[in-house]
Length: 246
Image (tube, rainbow, N blue to C red):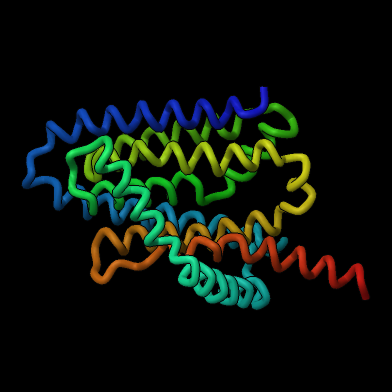
């Protein structure tokens, strides 16, 4: 059944979040600052690991070409420009604030931070894309099940410090992975290994940004940088179209 991987992912994020909320009640206030700092370092490590993994897939030598770097820089600039025009960050904050008013007594800033942070971590990466494609085309949810177990652990850790906003990231996970699964047969020819690697490379940079946001002010507007991740896909589509015309 197509979509079962995403369903499992959503369920395990809920389970992890609930466990994290139980753990949060047992954590003394004096430890929370240290835990947030530890979480920041862990998140930056996840992002750095993703960058290294993506760079090793860039070409056969395992090194990044100048074209790869240039595309990353252009993608970050163009994607952020688009995100600022649409003001994605503000819309994500508004969504988080809406759910906070309806379902939680936490401060709106903590709720929104948990929602945005978890949404980015769970959706940015090659496993979300490849797993959803495999689920949609081959009806094989193995990759997404593996991802779900990792997400459950991350949800537990995030929820223990950021609260119930983390659990509401299931909306983002369901929509993002669900759409890729439903449209898998159409998008698969365009999502080559190179494109997925380039998208994951940029996504991992955004995950590193989450770690910085835990520690430093002013916060990076990572929501407004989200379109950057999809610029490589658009670039290669234009490149293929131009190659077909000339």
